[in-house]
Image (cartoon, rainbow, N blue to C red; front, side):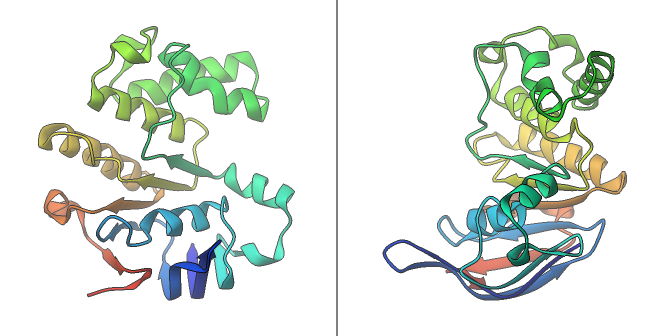
Length: 217
């Protein structure tokens, strides 16, 4: 599903975030990217999502070489990817339902399909009783579940999460990991970044360790 082949990513000022990185992720895998803050995990996730382009090397996502497609094609590919951001990017001026439906509105779904899919996504993360609540009334764990519902509402093939448990207590973190496990069982390819390997427990069936933009040990 995902292949990195000698990938480099440099930011302005000749700052190297990813250096000669090669790995592959099979369709349907649940994989953790582990490493300290600033190791390059977020950059890798954004490269997979196509929101960043590699400075050198090849990245294949679902059989497509990202270096050989234009921006319109990148936008199409992102329709098959769900991204859970580290800073949530929740819209606090609208309720839970309206936050989750946004992606479907952009993709042009009918009102009937929007209602069906959004209700199912919200229910899948256990927020059905708060469907009309404003985000600021949710706890930290509930806000993260809202982000997951928003990321899966369009039924992506790949789900990417950037430090989804970083600001949660252990109980809420484990509940979030259980949700990812559920989507993984449904066949979704999942890549999760985490700096605290202690929270992974039995979930880390495969861990790719990143150190200074390279494979670590």
